[in-house]
Length: 244
Image 1 (tube, rainbow, N blue to C red):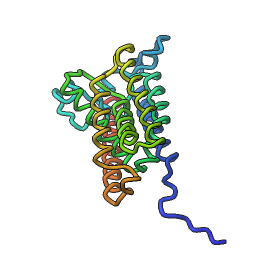
Image 2: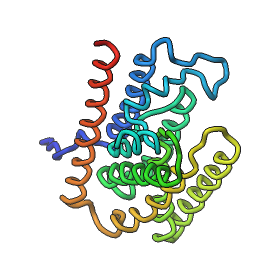
Image 3: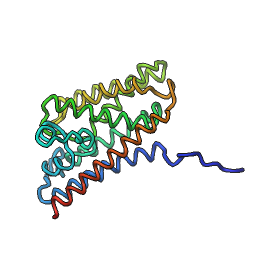
Image 4: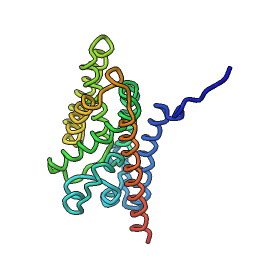
């Protein structure tokens, strides 16, 4: 029997998820290497392996400081790929593994990445408006994915829709509790990402409403190119800034 390889079959949900996780981990490792002796080493799990604030700043942290002082509007994208500690990156990547497959299943790979990017940027923009001094982390983008899943569950209805809505509602409650109980949580970013995700879920639609189109693919590829370029640029500039 002949075997036909479908176009783009290499681009699976597992590959996309690994690519996002690996990029986050690589950026975290780079931030630690660049921090050198200025990295915070402590037994306190909330602050263990914390990169230097200066390093996070030039690698693409967002907030009032980089945007007002340096005009770094590009940080609305790059901040989504930086983390402030080992527990921070581990927690966010575990959350990503829980929510991203669901969103990829219902919205498709390309719309998932667009929602992740745009909702993350919306969260950091709201953080800027809310006078957050310096902020980083994938949680704004993650909240966007939760928002999209929340919209899907409510919009679709039925047994599956109700199950998704119930689960994602539980995640929203958890986010609110974490925001009140844990230190240094950017609730502006969480709220901005969540509401942007709900809006984008409605705007872009999910698979049962319409299949992914050339526009969806093109938009996601555009965001991938922009993200890779901005992260690579910050790494290269940081290297020469530190080691030259």
